[in-house]
Length: 409
Image: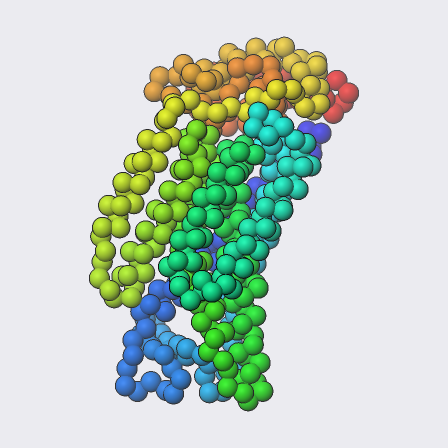
């Protein structure tokens, strides 16, 4: 089991790394094309069908870029498609969701104190809600509301607020934030896969067949692309939030998540206005700062983080408690770790347990056995800088206890 835990951890790390790499590529190209689109200039000598052009300088060279609002008169010999960044980001993200939250559903996904269901039901709910959210969003975009972009964005925000509240009523706070990010990312990637690229392929097919492409396909794709642009920053916050329990593990976490979407939209409005040469709406930064201060205040009302304690220990955790050496390991953790990982940390200047992890009871230690093994047994990540002087002998005791489970100990 210990070899499996180590390989699983490295596998999760590799998937996370891939996810970050592909996300950088996707977000980078998305931001670039939005800025390019907004900065296009109309000049007298534009070719027929061209909407605008822009000159750019980068890497020691000059670039002359023109955009055709519907399509050029003839199909170019070479065409670069920007789609694989989106697909790879979603696929690696879903793989990470499965590795962390589905494989560890009894700890990271399902909270028996919130919704007492089996991990299997929790996973089914997760998948169904992600698919369902996309279907609802897609129907809204195809409804008469598509003629009013602002009204559609407001309704989309209301949908996300409702989902934020819903998830905090059925999952752990950490999983709730992650699922909001997963739904938003799914909407963005599905926009590319199911709307933007198919519409572009219709235009390409018309060009090859000698037909005049219909402008409606470009308008539909543009609407979805605009949504993706405004949703990017909130997704980044939600994906990073699992490292900060003040965001996900407090009473008003669903309101915090909702305000994050407003902050992201506000910041993107600033950059979009600048790129479109419509001035610099500096008020957006003041509004974003005010919203962020409200978020910080909400995270301390009340100033107690939610824990992951379960009403009844899963069978796996029960085996950890019954395993040889657990009493010694429990004493080590209580002596070396619980001064920080407690509801009221004793370490000076620390008001909340790091990442919301508490290690004060046998149940809490058993539930975090794998993390303790990896963080304090197999590596020296914890305690940080070994500030509580955990000895090598104590680390070996943790290793022997965890690995003894796989040997029938």
